[in-house]
Picture 1 (tube, one colour):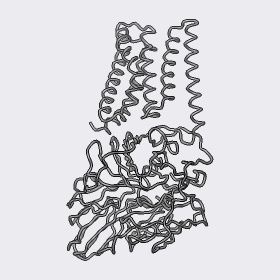
Picture 2 (cartoon, rainbow, N blue to C red):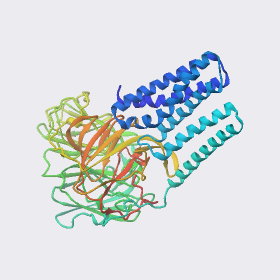
Picture 3 (cartoon, rainbow, N blue to C red):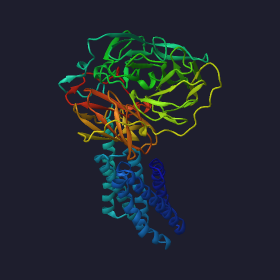
Length: 613
């Protein structure tokens, strides 16, 4: 059974264990019928044994998947469960329902509920204080139950008082935690350091290519004629395709005509200086209505990239505030175009230069023998499965980085949210279809029937290409455990997407020093896919689930449920950088953190005007 399946089964079992022990203890307390009570205890023991077995399977996949179960949940559960098997069950079968018969199933029920609390609210790694509170709560509830069952004068009152004190402590701790997690009016991250992010800006010399982008609300028309209300750059979405030559200096002036929100420009996948990264509250203040900000950086990194706002991106990016960025090492040959995938009004669209977003299949005429390079950008929150039919093709670049992979026939490739694949081939004398689910791009030499969408197996992108050199040693290592837990967001318990049990901005930063190689282990304990994206850097994928990668450089990589990725990052771009899940609703619900270089500070604050997540 896969790790993802074991995690899903454990989520069912943790509830089943608590409920089954609750029924067993409650039935023994109220009905005192031998056979039904004994059967309920046996059912609870079976559920407990299944959870132990599942935990063992998860532990074999990695301690991250089982640590809190082995160190807290099961040690609380197993003693009363075993006592119920050894003491309570034989007495029930004899019809003897004494306090000793009843107390152990009820204590196991309390421990089962604690196990559910661990699973839903704590995860891995365990926090010490809530763990202690939980242990005291189970012991206090069990002691109070024994006291009520035995009704022993002063000693009984003492147990009840002890239970009440423990309950009061738990309530007080919960209230204090909610108070400490209340939203601050303004919060500054990385406030100390000798270098400010505002000093880490782009160059001032060289040939300059200047662009102006104005954020405004507008109605756009899709290829089908459907009209969609959108947020745009210069009245269009996608915004203008920015295309420059390697060696030029890029200067982009951003203006805003948006009355209800700020806007920034984040250069996704491009290693701009930190002060140009466009993260409100971290590298700049969001641009308000009537304001402007000038971004400037060197076009020294050839490849396919894109730009989008990072002010409330889950809302504003999805509403249309994005565009493509291409840096050419030389004049492009043949049909070489960025292709943006985006969902407008519930319909997946394909946008290619020279036409509106196509909610279906866009068509372009390309002469046979023409070199073709499709720079496909996934601007949506979820993955897209790409295929090319009608011609063999290669993936010439992944996330802007060239790869030398084999020729593919009918194989398809999953493109992470935020990711880019450059698909390269020579146009044949028949039509070619690039498919992406319900949408696609049809290239035709002028005649012939469109081929069916590709339906072959999925390519493992971590095993495609290769040739990158893996560092021999690492200076630091970090582990990011991704989970779905109840956490305090703004002082209120809410179901959240967490990193190491915490939510943004309470996730501790990964601190690095310039020149270091840093290894990150990314573990997905949740039931959802997480496309992780570190700003300002690519990562070198070392392994997935213990299987060595090609390796390949990426800046947006999909960590599926139950997977463990090991990636390496070269700390060569000083700053205070955001890292987050690019399923942007997950980022907004807490799955965001930052990478902080030693000696770099940010003078900006997270406040009512700056919302980077």
